[in-house]
Image 1 (tube, rainbow, N blue to C red):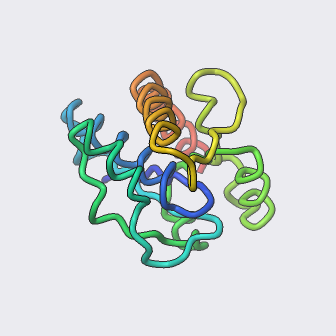
Image 2 (cartoon, rainbow, N blue to C red; image 1 turned 90 degrees about the horizontal axis):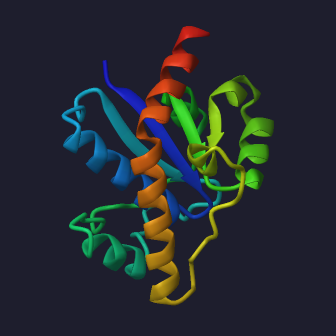
Image 3 (tube, rainbow, N blue to C red; image 1 turned 60 degrees about the horizontal axis):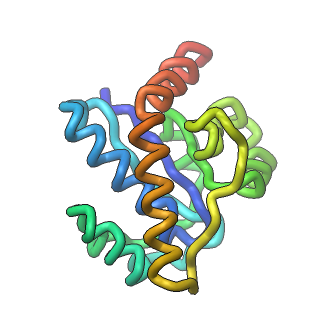
Length: 160
């Protein structure tokens, strides 16, 4: 059974698709791509929009192709099918917890992977260097926190 990690940001154009791509690359390098998959969605996504050009470029520089990404707005079905939901900001967590109270226990902030609580800044509309900084931050959080994500999944599933 493949476990689903749903990464959520606002527009599903930068942060969450990059985080999902980093997670999927890490799972593949760990030989666990058949066990874990990262997906992404946005709280205010414009359906079917491609990833931001600078996000595509930042990921391409790391050998990860985001050109096929298309934005999706968060749905109750996506929340229900996710084993855990990883959000970029406290506002995302509050909004999803209010809209989907049954999912509160499985919603985590991305920064918690570093045992801290802070928002991941949205680079949308910014310079290429801002996207690069966000990509670097997300890559580090996924790399350092990959095992913690698996632990979150096991905890979420044991309380079901």
